[in-house]
Image (tube, rainbow, N blue to C red; front, side, top):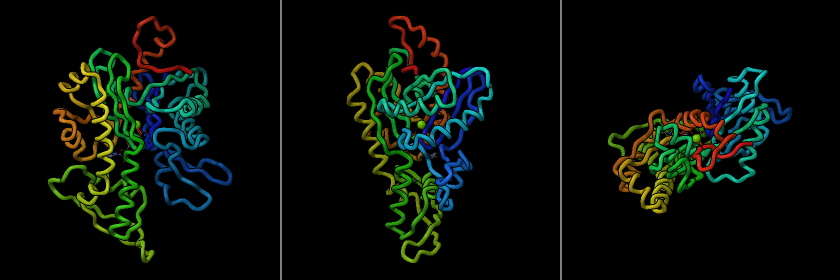
Amino acid sequence: MNIAIDLGTSNTRIFVEEKGKQLDEPSAIAHNTETCEIIAVGEQALKMLGKTPSAIEALYPLENGVVAHSYLVEDLVNIFLNEVYTSKVVMPRVVASIPIDVTDVEKRAVVNAISSFGVRRVYLIEGAKAAAMGCNLPVMSPHGCMIANLGGGTAEIAVLSLGGISVSKTVKSAGNQMDEDIIKYIRRKHNLHIGRRMAEQCKIAIGCVIKPEEEKTFTVKGRDALRGLPKSVVVTSSEIMEAIIDNAMAIVTAITDVLEKTPPELIGDIHSDGITLSGGLSQLEGFPELVKKYTGIATVTVANEPLDCTINGCGKAIAYIDDVEHTKDGEIIPLMAAY
Ligand SMILES: Nc1ncnc2c1ncn2[C@@H]1O[C@H](COP(=O)(O)OP(=O)(O)OP(=O)(O)O)[C@@H](O)[C@H]1O
Ligand SMILES: [Mg+2]
């Protein structure tokens, strides 16, 4: 039996061969800092974020797509894999997505976390490539295609052809950084201190990166920074846009940088087919329009089910596992390495 896992900064998704996506949970974990006991993972741990007593810590153990707290990631992966994989007889083979520009040490950390579950082998695939496969882009053909996978910790932009990445760029500040920017903005402008979950809810509800046609509002609740007492403030989409636009522009600049470095034959394909956006942050209102405006590319589309592109692509990549073991000369396979 083969499994695919997308261990994202914000969400972890697991795909089981012949069954499809079986798990989709926040990559959050809560543990007792004194006894090291795991209190909760996923949705349950997310609910505890910012609300725990002093002996308990709830956190996201991955940062910018890489393992930041290795023991906690190991526990998280083990608990999640146990939920979907119950066979005690056959050890699974696992396809895992990793960001493009990771070091060998960072790669090892992901492999070790998964291996601790007891797996036969781990095969890696770049997240952007998996996302492109999940969007049904012609990744394996000699035709250029471009994906911008915009997640919580990273925004990865890649031009792909013949199963490989021709040009790419990673921006290590995406959805989570925007939440932080909203926290700072609201504190500065309204003297209101809000938590990360509130900032994220506000971004999802009214966030936008182009001037909104209709001004939406959202009530943020937190602590008055001056008096220390509970307070709520109504913020508008224009204010949230002001808070997050610099980060959005950093992503757009990375997209234009990638286009500038793309070989002429491939850029022709991208000019006619356009750019596909995937990942949770691609749903931010106005992102395709912003990309269109600064790249001049007429077709910029958000993928169907943008949150699931990477895991669906990892699931498709399972079909190439056997090819890794028996590659013939010149054969093109999307999987990167086996451990
Ligand atoms: N409707 C929405 N509008 C704006 N942002 C959204 C929306 N839905 C989700 N997001 C944001 O998308 C991000 C999560 O996306 P995703 O699940 O693709 O990330 P991830 O795969 O866990 O992270 P990464 O790929 O960076 O490691 C979060 O920052 C979340 O706030
Ligand atoms: Mg992701």
